[in-house]
Amino acid sequence: MFKGSMVAIVTPMLEDGSIDKSALNELVEWHIAAKTTAIIAAGTTGESATLEPEEQLEVVSLVVKQAAGRIPVIAGAGTNSTHTTLKLAENAKRAGADACLIVTPYYNKPTQNGLYAHYKAIAENTSLPVILYNVPGRTACDILPETVERLAKVKNIIGIKEATGKLERAQEILQRCGKDFEIYSGDDATALDLMINGAHGVISVTANIAPAKMAEMCAAALSGDHALARKLNTELDLLHQRLFLESNPIPSKWALHTMGKIKAGIRLPLLPLDSKYHQEVKEAMQNAGVN
Image 1: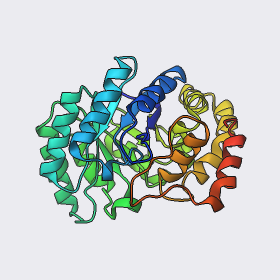
Image 2: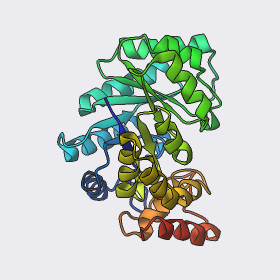
Image 3: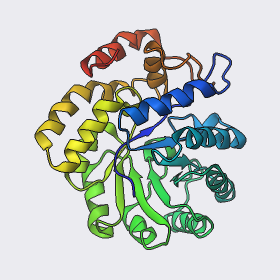
């Protein structure tokens, strides 16, 4: 259903931490013009951890309204509570999202059977397509390929955002689940290799800063023009690395602020990017042809 360069969009905020609706609308227009293929709203990069449920609904609704059917919108809806996740999935449906992205439950460390039951309950209680999201570096919870294979057979579960950065993990999921089950890289640095090996696209942090080049790189990779894809990816590589010098989305929001796209707002416990990293991120932006 989805492919290519899909941006995990930041949530623009004013200096007091309130949502900057105008800037969010402008970002949506920028991504549509840059040929981003889908927008993930209220995900990790969108600071979902510090958005209230009604704010998540507001952010997704704003993005859906501004997109106006021109680009798919996927709503972040994962929590470490199945009950709460179901409520957020309902909100995503109310907002008009095209799918929901559900991160593995964090902190409480469910078993693999618990993960299966969690995702199955969500899929059975929403009409939206469900995308699994595996990022054990943040959640301390790893959904294993054999569990993904079980879940791929559940109606409404269409794919996975695999953010381990391990090529062999994505290849095993492909082998187990087949080409109809969609795999999206959740790691910009390894996204090209994953797409060359059968992944459908990337849910990208880098696309926040260089949307047009990310879209072009992904389109080249998926069309088989690997030489062009590698050339473009080389130009993006420093961004892939340096947008994680501090916790995402700290560097991305700082970069967008320096570009004049958003205000400097970010919510505690996150702080603006430490000045010692400013030059490194600027260098990465210049290398990617953005300023």
